Length: 299
Image (cartoon, rainbow, N blue to C red; front, side):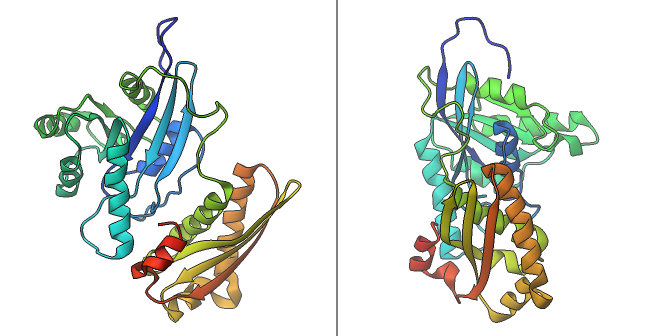
């Protein structure tokens, strides 16, 4: 954290992290908080839910709200709900972090900036600066951004390499109101373990499977029971078609076993205890356009 003057007032507030798909919003959240609370993959649209990550320092509590990537290309009721989550988050918070890819501002980025409410305190995080061959490539981009919105600050960062994060926290702290902490100092998210378990399974599907299956899959936790330090978790992965089920299971169930094994390792790391995980795969056609199913899955 950046140093602040002795006796400085404690600050606390919510900051929404927004941007187009695949700019590194969830990676930024995880590295700002210092723990994995939002799933990541190299595929766009991995994040489907609004996820809160909490960082408490001596002088401030940052309550970061990760949001799905706002997109306009693909339409379904699922995507409509994810886009609505973005716009609702912008209205619910006092500070916004707009994440852009360093070196280029796309029409999709401009569409996100156009959603910003008038008068909001907004900081731009130019992410992935480690991929730039020349750092002066940021100057034209900064000049391009200046007339689009009265940004409070534009901060170059690399979430993955943890570069520029102290400067980003410092810029955000200055915008938070002077008030007491909302959460306990040891809390890192407002999401429960049941939600996190489902997300860890879905992350491994995104990371280990090809392009089609991850976008057609969702995860429901059927049972979550804690017996001492052991957590017994029964989950179901729903896909849209029979061939997707076959691909997800793999020969002799080997693919699904690898997904479950890797997901269980993440759960045990974050939960701090052993996990028994059983995962089933079922077909539910059209779930992404079924309002009842979407509500059941928490979208």
